[in-house]
Amino acid sequence: MPTERKFNPVFAENRKARHDYAVLETIECGIVLTGTEVKSVRHGEVSLAGAYGAVLKDELWLLGADIAAYKFGNRFNHEPKSQRKLLVHAKEIRELKMKTETKGLTLVPLKVFLKHGKIKVELGVCRGKQAHDKRDALKAKALRRDLERA
Image (cartoon, rainbow, N blue to C red; front, side, top):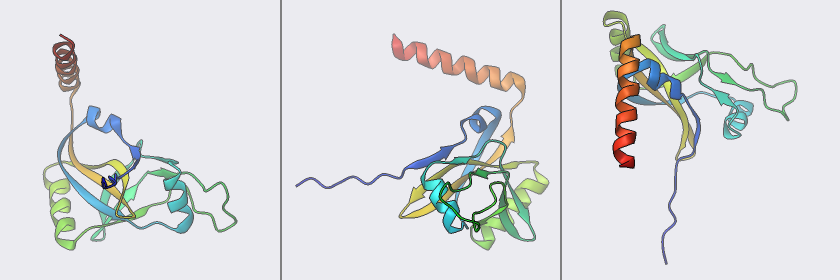
């Protein structure tokens, strides 16, 4: 009898981040959510456009992410654009803080997904691309696509 394959559904993906930034490394983080936030995320009502990560008071936070208010929530529903704490080890927070302060890198959320029943955020340590870098990437992508078709 074949075994069932389990997959990790992706609730939101920040595709524009890969176009605007060069992703140097990625880190998987847990995220602190309330009940109605979890329900909204599971319905796919989350947007990472304009979101970023920041180290504030030795804690890692996700800022600017929009989790829509839960449709069936009551007066205890959550705020859509609130700050959300990200869960990583203290050593990783120190490393991320050093990279963002000294090297001028940015923390950009790349996707929100489910892993072992927990909602996770993939955070990228990124460097901004210049306009000519973006054009070069588009040319290379078009060339690869043409080669695959031939």
